Image (cartoon, rainbow over all chains, first blue to last red; front, side, top):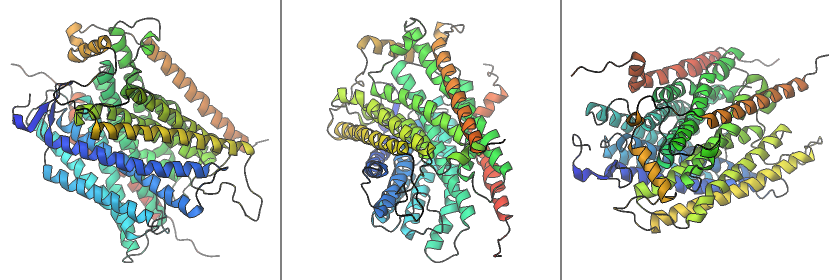
Length: 575
Length: 48
């Protein structure tokens, strides 16, 4: 217990985990989580309107509102929802997991205020029709100054949270509130925070001059330089998601199955590869920009970036392998996949995270590395294949993992129980299934050349006849159907969380209700409470099931990668 | 009690401040500064 830095009135002991939950940090975790869900809902309403517009037989919105909703959707989903929740994770990971108080409550209040005001201002100005410039807001497109100011305020607030986080880490280390290396989940959160600092500095370099230009005080920033630095914000912030998502994978794997990292050093090494190399991936967005050399493009998107891809593949092995070890230690040893069938699929926190890892790896990861190859990218750039990729990473991966986290956050931090548990069990499948369908619809439509960010795919009324193969329109319909299913899954998530947080039965002084059978929960608790070393250091369990999954993944990767090279070869017939 | 020896790589992995510095330096050098130099070297186009 933390006796060196905190009085007993500063914290409560969690009845489920036995960890100290510090009241000040708990408040900011809760506040950030509530704000995250509010902006998730706004982004989701925009999302369903967009899906029903890109579905070419429906075309719900007119062109003006399409671009307005696209701006609203991008800003709320890629910035506000995800970063608010990540800030909540930083407060939790730096205090509860390190058994220490928050560095500064005052700074936490200031940052929360800045972020909330920034998000509200940005949403207001978009809905007022003064900022139809999309999330990227490339000059010479010009929005109302409040659009840039809102995002800048939000970013400054997030930067202050990162400072508070690092200062809390410093205090914990100084006061020796933990022994040895910091816990892996906190290390993952620290990785996310480091990447966030890089992202936010790039954002300031791009958006502050653009704000001054929108006020009429300076000349317009060079569009090429703006794009370079804006993507230092836009793509780096998605790498914050990746690091935070992987930290959530480890956390939920432990909580739901009793898994422990197979090898702490290897897992930390993979996070370090993220810190050092993952940010270079932003160059993917500039692969067709004429001002940058092939050397710069290939170094940043291939050679150096593959070290970060290696990191993802390490996590992609260690997370399921650690679960396989845990399940086999519980006695589920039948065949190669007996342990897999016995995983706690009835726990929505677990199923959300499992689906997140599968969707992120098999769809998002494979397409990302392939499309990020300079030569292949020329076939896919600015087509719907790109949103098909990132909806699998950011939504199917990160958002689904964060939803899974919320199934633990609500009982452990808000101390409230869920209603309608049967619906909660199907929610991750509904949302994840919808995202997979939508992502595949986007990807296949994109292979026919259907452009992204375009209201009218067929360019109706153009002088020259345009349009796409009828199959492309079927795929746009698939996109729309997937979008509707995902939207229903998301609405269900919000209803479940809001009902639990505001009206749910109190769990104060009680243990978190289990989603598993009492026997399974007891086995999980036993694994969490005792270390492997208690059973002897020579304790080893093989992971044949995970090895088979890895081989299937690598084969899928190879087939997709070489199929794209074959498609590229078809473009230029050399006789 | 004799203090446990910590491997240098473990020390490196535990040094969050060094990781913060490297995490800032590598992307800034490889992506931002190199990219900025290339863009600044692009000559202004002229009309024919």
